[in-house]
Structure formats: C-alpha cells, structure tokens
Length: 146
Ligand code: SME
Image (cartoon, rainbow, N blue to C red; front, side, top):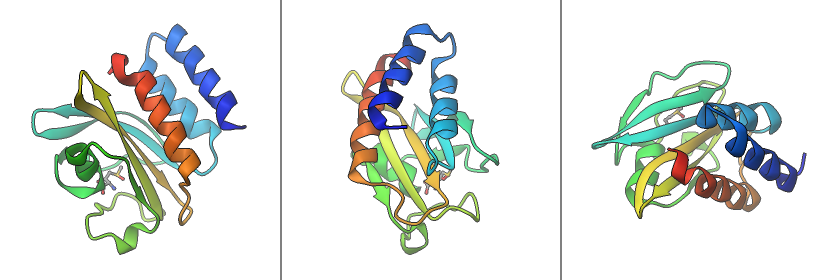
C-alpha cells in the first residue's frame, strides 16, 4: 500500500473512531510491513508514559524520563529521530532482541511536545525520508487527539 492511501485511511479512522490513538497504532502496525512494533508515548510531567501500542511483545520501557533513550531525545529536542542501526547508538534503550532500526516522531500540541510515535523495525535502516515525512504528517493529524 502506498503512503497516500495509508494517509487517507488514517484520516478516515481519525474522523470515525472512538479510540483514535489505539486504532491508528493498530493500523500502522498491521499495514506497513517494516513497522514491526508501533507505540505512542504521552508526556506526563518529566516522563514519557506508554499509551496504545501494537506489536508482537510488550516493552518493559513503559515510563522513560525525557532526555533518556532515543524516545527521550526526540521529546527533548522536538525533532524526529531516525536510527539506522540501534546497536550503534549509545542512547538506545533495548526492548526487543529483533529490533534493528527505530524512528521516533514527536507529536506537538499548542507549541509543546505532547507525545510521540515510536516505531521499531526488524530491518536495518528501515526508515527512509518518506517514512519521516509521512509520520510527521500523521503526528500533525493526531495533535488534537492526544
Ligand atoms: N528504544 C526506545 C525505547 C522504547 S522501545 O523501543 C519500545 C529508546 O531508546 O528510547
């Protein structure tokens, strides 16, 4: 499926769902092959707290201090993080043995970071600029629903 189709399907989910964040996470995880695990973290004080997620396993990192890990870096800088090889990034907090690359995209609301989408892939260098542009658009669409 191409990103334009995925984007319009997600738009529909946002318009119609009564459980938007969970349904969007499920949709991304089930429809994009290289998205192995998809989760949304929500900012709570100085921490990121795991909200809806979809993937083969649960993560032990359900609360991450802002500033720690790849997730915490994206939350403190407000910028998308793309990690081609997680084992070469000293910030990386390990969750799944199968993970090889990761993307974290902040969700902004009223000029502040309200949360983020975190995606792990079992493929090395799985995330291209197309993923970044696509996911930043999805995060904009989720901004008023987090
Ligand atoms: N790898 C993340 C932690 C979250 S798990 O991938 C679900 C990090 O380094 O912040």
